[in-house]
Image (cartoon, rainbow, N blue to C red; front, side, top):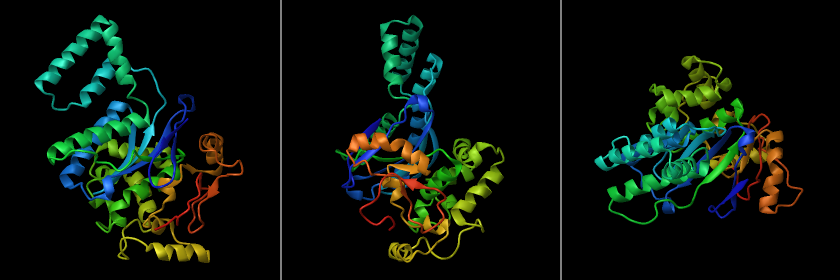
Length: 340
């Protein structure tokens, strides 16, 4: 199933993997209205906390994220749906209210009484909560709504905060693909010239993992060799090789590669190391609809064609061979330059 999205002058589509297919991973991104730099450090901190809270409530797993002054990225795993007990539903509901008011505390008691009686009102409450869980769209909608309420209240403003619904790319759940996407997301502040190392940027998943946050470490462990290693030092060293290459340390060459230079390399058929390419904006990572191996992209192509009405000759497109992507392919070719 696909959900259509508005924005960017091109029709976006989100592939929603059926529950029977198991977990799915998405890269989601959204911008503030007019791309204005509205999010200061306090706002980023509030969003950071809400991101973890709402992911817990919805039953989704954050692999990594980055919150910038005018947009945010999140790489999120949507597990296969399972039955949820009343005890777990109540726990998740309470997560949304870490400092409950007297009214909210009283509301918790009412809910508990309804669940004990197991009457019609109890089932209605269960249905409302379950409708918000195990799906990407409710997660993103709730996150953006709750943050907008806080932001508007705090800044005496009203109206929309976000420029569009959100963009998303379905990402193949293979270690190499996920590690590349996660590194691209964590390197956002490096591309912006704010830091030389994402560990020094407080509002990204990698920095939280380095600081010892268990949930953030869990996300990176999952994508490094499929989570088989429980040694955080080994996981971090492996991930840093994706971030910085063999030396596993920042260089003094500057924050990013110039987009025009990247295009010249592409046209000349040259090659650049992956960790250097990730310092340039890679539009395929946010506009490609599906990202993964050829077989993975081909698997989802039929449904995409049915939704968009694209010609049957549409086929998975290999990434421009400016670096060694492995077998990485994308569903959508871009009208504009893929790097910049």
